[in-house]
Length: 368
Ligand code: OSB
Ligand code: MG
Image (cartoon, rainbow, N blue to C red):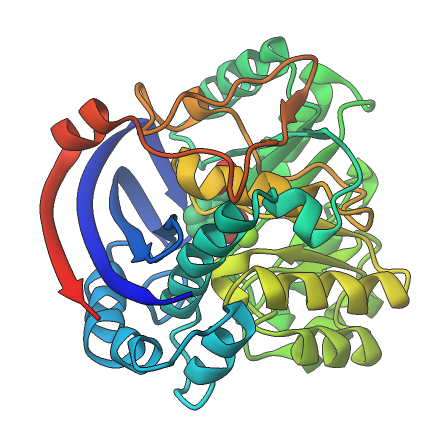
């Protein structure tokens, strides 16, 4: 395929409610969408970088900069590339996985559209709908949290994930168990907020039969996670730490995790995500699909990934209305706890032009 140009598009979407984690509070999603134009088809993607570098070193403005000045010029210079050539060409640059993932995905979407093949089929998806959980932010009070959790359970979400931090861990978990019972699949996510010295505190979560504790320690502390895993009963799952299939293999060998959260933006794209999935499956380690408060553009592709056979735990693949009053695509909905995997070519969805136009704050066209 011949690359003709790339459109960067910025938009700003208010969230339905403040989303608070141990790294801060989000009230709006600052979006960076890509539209890659080739001689055969157009491809769309969403860069999952956040406004500030609080989840990882990447952030929206840096991602846009590296795409414009480093990554796009490199792939625009390739003659007749396929997605593997695009991916390889970006490898000599260090880091910037979210920026690379966005560019690779836009290209892959265009390529698959030109082949009339869905991303789910291309990746090896095995199901047409995926069980969905919901990630519940830190709240000002326990009653407020119980209201939120109750609302999500009423909507049919099959698993609840509570964000935790020191001072908001055992009490909210106990309250949710007391109110909604022991049968609700429940897990927690600390987004690196603890240290190995907190093992005793985290062991207090043992009696609550959680599915997992996600990323309790800093991302570079694999050994710490391995030590912690020996001191608590709750299975340790890694998110921020897993930046590639190689790191996933290392983490599993070290005993640093028993479960892996896969986010394509964090590992540099869907090709690497499938490798992480394969490595985990080979080790008998369950995986699930994480989220980054994506709009329908990013969600569509995540649902395709989550349809692979190793995704045996519900993902953070919630319906559009969990995040936005109005999505940029036709909204994804939850039906009996499941969200449908798109079946159309590529990621299977494009933004609704009028909505996108209304929400767009800036665009830039980069000719190849
Ligand atoms: O750690 O999984 C995380 C959102 C933004 C950044 C990091 C995380 C999250 C979530 C929400 O937990 C996942 C979602 O529903 O999109
Ligand atoms: Mg997480």
